[in-house]
Picture 1: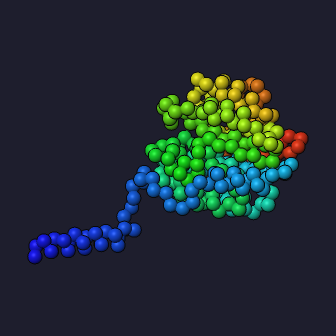
Picture 2 (picture 1 turned 135 degrees about the vertical axis):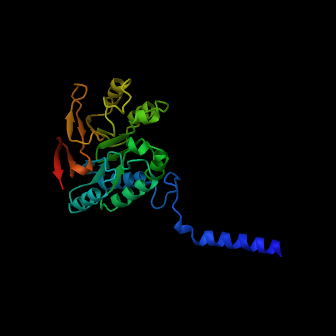
Picture 3 (picture 1 turned 135 degrees about the horizontal axis):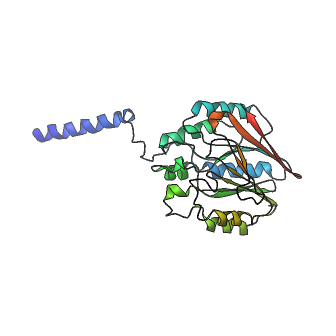
Length: 270
């Protein structure tokens, strides 16, 4: 009888735990991802398809949206009211503490965009197990895509968060990307989160990095986030301009238009 009662108690306990599973909060670093994954690969395919053959490409550069959910929702609404933008580049720091839910919350907001977007990895996105969450939701830390005749090369430059034990920047990826020139690739834009000469960048190799990226065909300019304010800097006095995007709390973003003659940009407030 005691054995029967014991087994019955165990069975009831298991059933109760299963029934109440939704009442338990998972640990924020447990890494269980729900919802859409592989976003960058899906959206780069969309960008390449919709921009193929276009001579004028317009895109937005934003970033550093961590914990700014209301501002990001307003950004999405503002962009959706336009019909002249091809895609959005998010320069990283989509999370603040590398929490799984931070990534998913911001992904769900950004998924409200009518146009495709890609997200770089930021230094805050590397905290805790954020690197794994980023890869699960968005994809590889280094990637590229072709929009019209321009190749966009998006790179992880958050060396400090890897304790210099991981190749950041990944010169092998950069070298291979230079060598893999696709049909139609006539010019290049580089996008990073932390720019050279910032505290996150491995500045032991900053000059080498600059030398490498200047080997890309017709490098137009570089984009960065991280510094939370608008900036236009010739960081190495070599004519290559780094455009820094404001954090989303400033309620501003950079709008670039590539034309056959070159490019222009403007600061848009929303």
